[in-house]
Each structure stands twice: as C-alpha cells, then as structure tokens.
Length: 223
Image (cartoon, rainbow, N blue to C red; front, side, top):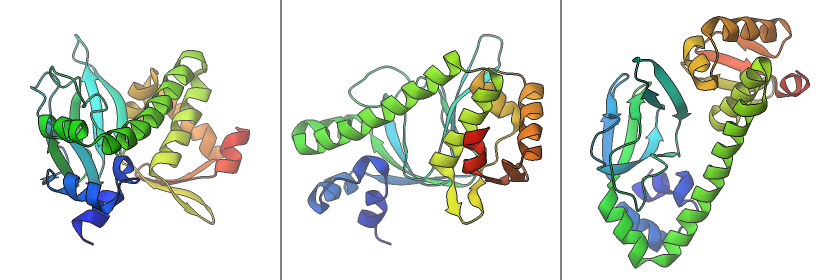
C-alpha cells in the first residue's frame, strides 16, 4: 500500500483529493515506537501533530501526587494532540505507545501553514475535528451524570466503536488495557471496575481475556 492510500485511511484526511493528499504527504515523516516508548511528555515544547498508521497510543496526565489519569486511548486512523492546530505552548499531556506503533508526524508550523495556503484542506480538516470534539464532549457528559456501572458500560461501548472489529459473534477487541487504567479513565477505583466487569461477564455481555475480548452490543445496550 502506497503512502497516499495509507493517508486516506486516516480519519482527518478521508475527504481530501489526491492532489491535497500529495501536499500532506510531502510533510509527513514516518516514526516507529516500541511498547512503552514515549512520543512526547507533558510540558515538552510542541513540535508536531501525529497520525496513527498502526498501533495504540495512550494519552494521559499526571497530577500533583504523581497519579496517572488517562485521557483517551487512540488507534489506527486517529490523530493527536487534538489541540495541535494554530496553538502555541507545550504539549498538554503525555503520549505513550501501548504496543508497537507506526505514526506519521507533521511539524506543527508546517501543517498550520498548509491549512493557511489551502483553505479547502482547512475546511475539510476542521469538519472532522468538529465531529471529534462532539464525541469528546459526549464522553465528558457521561462522566458527569452516569453512575459507576453506566460509566463502565459507556467506556466499553466507546472502546467497541473506536477499536472493535465486528464479527458474527460480537465485536472483537485486542486492547491491552488493565482494570486500573480503565478506572483512571472513568474516575473510579480498580476494585469497582473489576466488580462491574465480572458481573458483565456473568451476564454474557463480555467474554474472553483482558487483552482480547468480545463484546455483545445487543446485551450491552440492555445492560
């Protein structure tokens, strides 16, 4: 698969013409990361925006007591940081590879200039970004109003929608996320997530092991 085809699979670039994609291709630099490698650290000088070709990237912040709070987990076709355009200042969080990952990096200044020079690209990019912001707002609203069980169910639904593969027996996910990491994402304790998770498995909503599991969306909706 050539670079243009790969770029077209990235969420932000799906609506671009071949000519517009070629402009993006000229700026993209491929970077590879092993599991545990840091793409950037919170507070580092903002250098680039990143687009995931393959792998999983965890975005998190660390509080004053040194506790990690996961903001989101991103997979193939997604970009980060979401505030990477037309803004100065350091990276707002830390990005770390959860598995071997391949990214395209575009220097922030170069991409900003591309959007200025080609308004059609900017409009298409901003439309996709607007959709992504609405999704993030929905997640925040769920955290604010849902009880603990509903939070875990909402998180599983988001994982299934963003990282799952639909098969006849359900949505399959290969997502190496611990119950502790899930707890950090929804503001709960690991023990609470573990208890709810086990109940969902008894109810037939979930099956499989932690790293590879199957979600029955029909049962999840009823849950």
